[in-house]
Image (cartoon, rainbow, N blue to C red; front, top):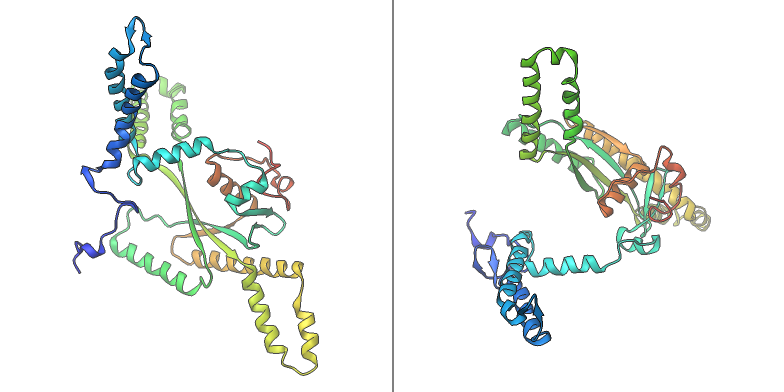
Length: 338
């Protein structure tokens, strides 16, 4: 099938509009002109007789309106490509008007996190599910051929089809490359006696520092970390238990006692969920390590909580050398301190 088949085209957005020119629509034009219209209305209706620096406001109306239109046009120009200028304006206004700090009960409506339990190394969601994370150290594929990429993709497909028999979520983070920290070693070398005594070596080190900094800035190099999020829900554990109870409950007389014994309580169900999660994380870790060049390790619950906190706040959080004293079985949000 041709890649130009119009029935297979993917729209750039959910609210695609007819474009007037380039990527700009009629809505973008209205947003760009709106500040100028506000200035004209204000000078004509609100302060028609005002004087600024000895000049009547009516005389300044058109220049001020032109400047306002330029501001509106700049806003439209800076609007991200994945959204429209009007939607982006609404997003910015909504963000400024919303409260940014929430107590734990309010924050749960966003994060869906109930608590962090470092004793069992799990995070509990508000729906009762437990989640854990496995960090993936991927194989270096920078110089890999197309055949090697295809082979690696096939191995990963086998991992998904054979090892992963439960829902997972793939999560990746990016952070800026620490250029200053990396180049600090070379800048310190400029003060060494052997470098000072060799002008050519000094010039070479200085040239490398300038080139490497510019090169990283041009490439926008980042460090990426990859994670597999594994959940276990109460329904999954309950379903397995109910299936066993149903098979044994058909035994005459003993069926009643078997149902009573195997029914279990909340603590027993939680322990079963923790055991199931540990098994799933271990299987995921082993399966990823079997992929050539890949490494994997389970992420402690305290570190996973920091990842969740950074996802929602956009900032790094530190809880000192003893996160157990902060978390335990306490909520992830609230009462933690700065």
